[in-house]
Image (cartoon, rainbow, N blue to C red):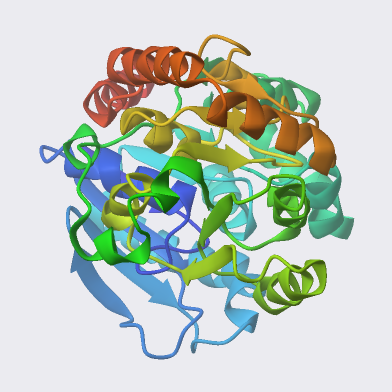
Length: 370
């Protein structure tokens, strides 16, 4: 099976969507996967193979690469399709790259088009990004032969956008090989005493993840430390906030780490918390559950698919630092509750969110489309 993937970015620029492509393709070696994306950074190769995927990066490595991607990717896809005669067009996220796939689909209507929804931003933010091109993006949904959404929330959004084809909910997963507690080089970050009162979050430092609210919540939790793993545009602003609130000694910014290293840091903490304002699914909650951490999250987007309040984690109110602090304190003060939620979360991940299971579901979807 020859599959052409359209993604606005790809490794080494890694988010949830890019990680999903990597994990799924690595488990389906019988297929040929080619991928078109924007170059974005000048030091990246124009063409290379990473794992199971041959990557074609378009542009000169500037911010304009994304905006020019629809036309550039269309002409590249047209050339590649004439050479390879792809069996399937796979679009990951309804973004710039998806328009190129739409143009190719209009030219070759018999080639099936699979649209995968991984969006984590709010619908309002997405619509602002679409701007005047929103009607064109709607056509991607309408022309897709199947829509695969990683959560029920995104499945409903597909209907709102006019999808007429079948909609399948297939979530992202977790590589259980990386879920065993392994401290390694992260071991020296905290003393043994600190670990009994440590909260961790793994997040891009962007507005949607509610990290300012989490830092404010720490002011209500005496002696509790917060580890923040990730990078992003708000790093300077969040560090300044911690300083202003007088919790700079208790909030550690650890920066970006490789996905396979995340479990090392999760193993340091007592509780995982990400008080998201919007979320497509929340794959990092699954990673925390996999290593046996109880989780605190908000009932937004796709999070309720995996977090049941009092069963696999605790909910807090989005945008409410006192509510966030109360949920964290409840877990820190109640070892029995922590143990029960952690066990339930770990069981859920093993039964439903193993990448091996997810890859086979995607493979069945590919075959049905062809």
